Image (cartoon, rainbow, N blue to C red):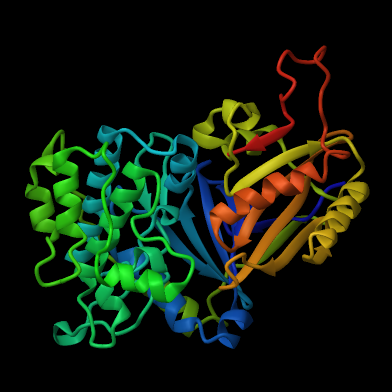
Length: 446
């Protein structure tokens, strides 16, 4: 019941831990050092077909330029004749977004710490002439020590010749600055600062300052900076947020001003990143000389059936290497990636998932014990997609990994609860005699 495992140079590639429109993210281990890494895999024909070469090349170059303790580290870039592999730091603590969903809102001191780390990371980017342009809690990860890690530089902008303004309208609507919505150009630094202000509001309030169903109304509120702070915000926090969410980018507080703000300065310990020489030779090799310089993919095993997940992988992929994150289901929420366990045969699990998905009006695509479910988002603004993959964790015991591939995370939360309620017949429910906690191992979340 083993499935093919691959070796990429010194990296042993494991299971898929994330999936988007143009890329998959695989868990892997450096066999030389034993270090866990995340490998972003892109099919070369796909990025050529969709004209993504410039964007991907820019993303890789940016991540090599902005090395910082609070930014996800890019180790190296490799390529085969058909694929590009971006080797990234493996961040085990999940998304800041998930922590907000769990806690509803965080304490002011915790919010201040995350905001300080965010501002340090963004300031470093700006010092290198790089603007992120898609800052939001879902792009902020947490490491095993609880420190912030900024990720996803796919929409970032590199330095402009002559200090020119940026003109591309991009980012997530609720976090985008008012000037980005116009057509007159905008300062990337000021736009990033606005997004940081929205993030601070969200982690302190537990909800968005600007949130409307239809985009015209949302844009109108953003342009007018029409929001109000909840009563539990301290005067200092409220004052700083109002300075950041200034709709006029020319009078909006800048990072230098934020770092001098009394509320921000409390317990602030700035970090100084170690200056490292930036070498983009491997990036050039990947995109300019792909046929001559590539790393071969070596299949280690190639038999049919679900992928077998060993205990090491389960522990490593749990939050902060803490086993309680695998088994504890006391929470009344679900995260972007959620798992349930079944004692039914893998073929029965697949057929049950397909039947339930079709009853919910979703399109179903199944291949090699992996199923993709697709539909329209609730707001009709885009696609909603979920990927399910079956793993054998013990004889006759299967774990089904469910993760969001496209769409809104909150929408995924609602979908998962509804979906699992329709799959009760295949989800394993241990008896009280096996464990005092009847929810033990019923659902695994990280």
